[in-house]
Image (cartoon, rainbow, N blue to C red; front, side, top):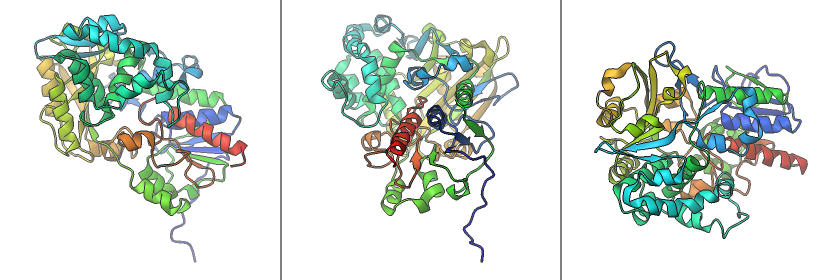
Length: 486
């Protein structure tokens, strides 16, 4: 009698390594394996490669929108990506005049500039404090980045990194209020820290604000010319140049469908890993994955615009990214509501205006804008009106520019990409436990315990962000294990 649970095998070419999922981490794992001389194949369920690095004409013909990620400070800073000479494969980084602007209701803005001194000049009374606090951290950027983009380990220079570690371990509110006296610097830092998806009263939310501020000074907040898809395409071309291959439009429902291979990498979150490989995993590991926590979701809007957004604060017209939320108190209140499962009336909005710096994104004279706000995980709420009110608040007349819009709720984002569980685009909550132990407490966070099976998604260290380090580190761990006969 036929096994009712049996699945039909997929017709795939033979390979030493199979990577399920083609996000930046999956492609990074594949490239590392191919460069090590292993015959490598990437299998992608969607029709296009890229995972969170995709671009599409979501609104009108001629307008190119980033479907998920848009601005990539950790992409240009990534120790692995920087080894790959992605410019050879078509990637060009565009640096806006200013990485970030943060407007206030009086028509002014705090600005994260490449220069620490120029940033400080926008912070009023807190300018000297900003220079004194950030200067020593930026001087140690490479050391700090190496520590941040790695699994839990003892750093090479623990004493030199102690200043960053002590500050990063705090809540964003505590750090902002202890470092700064005025609303401008506090508001700017609150917006940076809100990228953590954590309540600003929760440690280690300060860590995210510090890393993003340092990145703005050290490497900028750039965007790929032509859209985030170009980054994914460059990684794919790099894989092919190393001898690897990839197939799209192939859905893997169970690992038993795959042909035999030495190694399998899953660029998926714990929920999908359980579905794909549950029978191969130990009971303890299955329970650990089942307890994995996901963070808040996002509601996203893309606009096709008749012209550039006319911000009241002129500095916002020079910035690639604009944070909308004004004060520390307002941003903290909105993020606290999301953490409690509530929808904020005045959400903190992250907005990118790529077409100001990349004319390939829209027809001549027209523009695009990209924005999202945080919502409770699994929310189906439509936040369009609330987001647009926040934009209109700092850019009166914005609504008159809208030619078309495309929206996705948290639920719709998960339907688009199952890795965005409940709309969580970070691969899982970045709380204390999961910042260091994701997806489970293990000496090797990438190994599943099943022979030759590894996780390589943002649900492994160092977590969310377009940097490919989860995939690269997983591949390095797996190749090392193979070398030892593991």
